[in-house]
Amino acid sequence: MLAPLSIDGSVTASREVRATPRQNWVLDPVQDMLFVIAAPILVLLAALAMFRTLGAEAATSFIIVGHIVFTVAHHLPTFIRIYGDVDLFKRFKWSFVIGPVVPLVFSAAVLTYINVKGYPVEYFLYLYIMLALWDPWHFMRQHYGFMRIYDRQNAAPKHIAARMDLWLSVVWFTYIMLASGTWLANMLDDLQSTVRFDLLPIFPADLFAALLATTEAAAFGMTLVYAGYLLWCHRKGYYVSVAKLALVAITFGVMFLAYAPNAWMSQLVPEWSFKVGFAVIGIVHMTQYLAIVWRYNRNLATRAGRARAGWFQRLHSRGGWLIAGAYVLMCLTYGEVVTTERSSRWLMSALLAIGFTSTLLHYYFDGFIWKMRHEQNRENLNLDTGTSRSWWTAASSSRASTMLLRQVSYFGVPMALLTFGAVSVWSAPATLSVEHMMRAQALSQEGNATAAAQYA
Image (cartoon, rainbow, N blue to C red; front, side, top):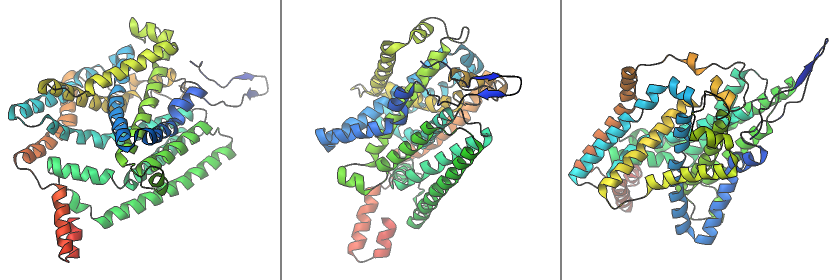
């Protein structure tokens, strides 16, 4: 592990001489390139190699299944960190203790109903719509967090630097998701076919085209604004992080290649799909997350009273490649156990409930335990703490009853709405998208182009 980086200086009677700022890293330059900055390129190249060696069908299956396992695997570090950080657990105790109750109990009730009725266990996957909506935002926030970590030495006003990084991330993520031409369409189709939320009428083709053109203009416009901001930083003598710029260029470049239809990927791998691209970027998200949690826990283990005594403190304070390998293996084992298909309906139901709860809690907990304005996060990631706030003063603590009511509304209401729609579909199946396609084809053959376009 790297020692905390700082700007060394000496004060004389007349002036202060400061050394040139150096780039800080999550792990170290080599490991950051492998697991964080260049990870999108490396994973994409590995995926392309699989298509060439295994064939399209086997490669697609391997990548998507691997993504599912890796996704659940990277939830475990969240829970390890929560358990290992005594101060964190004490501060947000009721969020952590009550957090699993609502999604787990709700999931168990739905799966019990599905089993009693004899419906396929896969019917439960309608609740994953909730996770599919949350996932892009979660990944974007992680990317933004790495930008802020690499930008640590920048002396520009924090409110300006943070907003510039955030808006660059938001507009490019939004544009690329829409440019895929698949994510929004799949989401609208899932909402219509699984929970009877028919939102297609408010998304006619011309509206989608307008949204895509608007977000594309916003992405390139924000890039020009950001270039002006970098020039301003350079002229002011503020530090500009090459690592941050490399992360941005590589992440968005590979995302566009993997998500959006483009000539290069079509020629290189004609069988490539958005689902494969989404899985590839999802694996990148996992490697980045494992890296930052490992760094955080390693630093935490050196702080007496902050790290939980016992195996957590012993293993993380020791570190090394052997311990790191065991850490990764344990996470992958968790992902494999939770996502493996079982022949027993009730065992499969239990695993589905655990997997859904695990994912929901990972998104929820990460939303507040990783805020970089908290002093405790900054000190364990070797960031300056001069302008940060302790999470003990950042927000008031909530009682158990208040937290339960809050999470019932936060989790329970959207799950109940989705369930109401899903049950109506199970009892009286809605028209599936394939039926609309068949109707459109029939109308087109009859010469009714207007009606055919509407159904299509």
